[in-house]
Length: 449
Ligand SMILES: Cc1ncc(COP(=O)(O)O)c(C=O)c1O
Image 1 (tube, protein in one colour):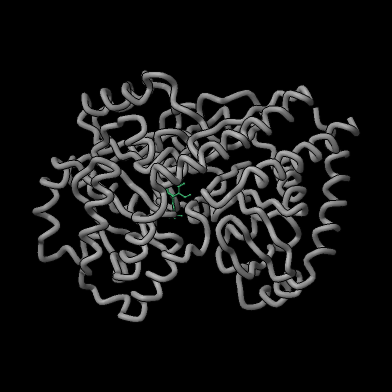
Image 2: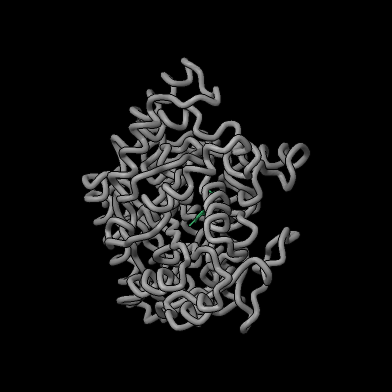
């Protein structure tokens, strides 16, 4: 439907425009090539569109300013890490205040109690632990699950993403479990560690768990990392019934689905997991994550947690649970990601979805836009019901072009897929700016075909 050579020609124009408007970033990117692998401090930063990454100067609320003085409406929000909005004064003040009194001691600070209580109130699980990142939290949780059940495998959804957790970088190839395309130097043979099932397929889940070797099912309640794939009616209730029947712990990873509300999809949809993982925005940008345990799981784990060798148990980290992270979570959760914040952010995401749907309809494209809470995402296919269908519709060229087009017009989208996230700091004008820019891009794409 979109002519490839026309797309390539448009892309070249956008690349030139990007280079011309970002001379300072170009200069810094050149300097970064020597001391930094691939010229960036973290691999994914190479995924931004344009010949080099934009170097950022500052970010505040829903705005980001780069080193060339270009201002953006930030719909990426640090791929959820800044879902609260950037540099919130109350969080900044709490971080500064805590930093002035010491950050890392291996001792608990009083904020930990407030944080545990607040997470329990939001997600309904009574007992909590901290981690440095959602990846870390997931790794610890998988270990706990194996310990508690004595079973060797974990189960995940096909085309899931749960961070850089070795066993989860797995997909289905027919009936076989294989390393996810792109996984570098697989550390484990996922065919031996992992069971993979398609999302929204209860029969497949039931058949696989019946084998009896799976300790836990780690899943997002809606897939968010291959576009948004929503659960079909009754699916999540079915997952709970099947996991329970097979003695498999259900771990719900709410790192992204926190966009559904203050207690994520767990609270919004009344889920009943054994373990919940949250990360990214809960510390207002300070690296931290947490995992919550049901009373039963907590009870069964409390013995091992008090053991003399817990320091080498494979769970935790020297700086984990530090006072800075706890102060940041307290300041964030007491003032952000609350009902009143979602009451602003979710209608903005609805407005975004309506705007994008309007452009798609106007041009008669077979695309769709999906939304979950304050997160919305457009996709180049009809709504997929599982990860493989979503993955099959990925069009890197088209995606990269749209991202660059938007970036060149002051709108930042997440470098992976076509996700836009809304905070209470965005405005309707921000949303409409995206709709306008997206509409122009689609007109440019379709006018040459
Ligand atoms: C659902 C989910 N879980 C865990 C993670 C890992 O988060 P982090 O990279 O902060 O460790 C991600 C990252 O995108 C994620 O989407």
